[in-house]
Structures are given as C-alpha cells and as structure tokens.
Length: 239
Image 1 (cartoon, helix red, strand yellow):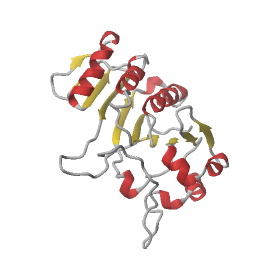
Image 2 (cartoon, one colour):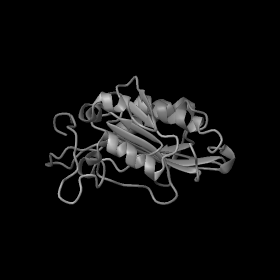
Image 3 (cartoon, helix red, strand yellow):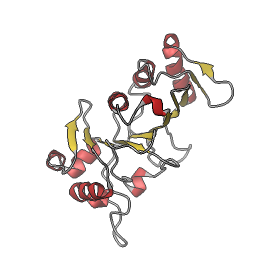
C-alpha cells in the first residue's frame, strides 16, 4: 500500500441488531486487547469521559447497552482516535430500516510508521471486521473530512485500500466476480464476508474494479437516468 497520509478512516455498516447478537462485548474486546488501539477513555463524549482500563471492559459493554452508543477515545503522542459505536434505531412511529454503524477516524503520529508497517493497522481492521461482521465496510486514508453517505440510498462510495463485502453484496455480485477481481487481492472471511484489498488504490484501479463488480452498485454508477443498484438487506423485524 502506498500512503500519502498518516490519517485513516474505518467505517462499517451492519444490518442486524448488535445487542441481540451479543457483539458489544466482542467489539469492545477487540479494542481493549490491542495494545496500540486500547482506549484510554470512554463515555458519552462530554467532559465526563471515564478512564478506561483492561479491567473495566465489561463496564464499557454495559454502558453501550444502557445508552445505545459508546464513545471510545485514545490520545497520546503516538496515536489518537475517537470512535462512536452506535446501534441505530428509527424514531418511534417510523419503520424505515436503519443500519447499525461503526465509524472511526484515526490520527497517528508519523513515528508509528504506517508507510513502512501498514500490517499493524490491517490486522486491527481485520479483527474489528470479524467482531462486527458488516454488510459493507472499508478502511481508507483521509486527507480531509470524513465521508458520510447513505449506503441504502446512494450505494458504495468508492474502492479503497480495504473493502469488506458482506452476504448482501456477495449475493448481488456473485462469488465468481470476487474470485476473478483484477488488480486486487480477494480473501474469503470466516465471518461470511469477502475482503477486496488493493495494493495501490489509484483512480485507474478503482475504475477497473467498479466495472468488474458492477458500476451500478457504486455512487454515481447508475448514470443520469438509472438509479444505483441496491442489494436486498435483511433487517430484523421492526427495523
């Protein structure tokens, strides 16, 4: 991976209820067990952030379940990030399906050396994907603001460094397409998804991969008179 920024964004979208799946514990444990990404504080995002330690991982999970969201933070000389883990539920009386969402913006010091050792970040993202099991997810370098998009309305934003496709996209695209992706590595994940990893996510490579997987699945891929193709998402009852 060629890097021109020390900052990254990780975004995962899920369709199932994280509480019912008992995965708050798994997701929190992924952070707590990683020495580089272990949070120093957690809470509501206000000034009353609570100090986090490996001994209160259960407290983090309970806080998440009780409040519907959890903010984790780590700030030191080497790495800083803020993550809002949220179980998205529609407002009362509305029945629009809603995605659960995990979004992380990571800012790292150049001394961490992502340019030389991106495998540390890659391993963490892989572990997080295994715990979250997204219907879609990605990890990308950022030079400016985060990308915010409506996956169900606008489709996949682009091809990035690490691209995770869950069962809805595997069914829509077909496993044969993933097995024959050009200029990228494809790995089947033990949680039921597929990882498409690009060595150098250039504009040309992005065009090739989107054409191969199906342009209409991506933002703007449907053209002026054709909408974006959206796979069938299996939301739980009431979502």
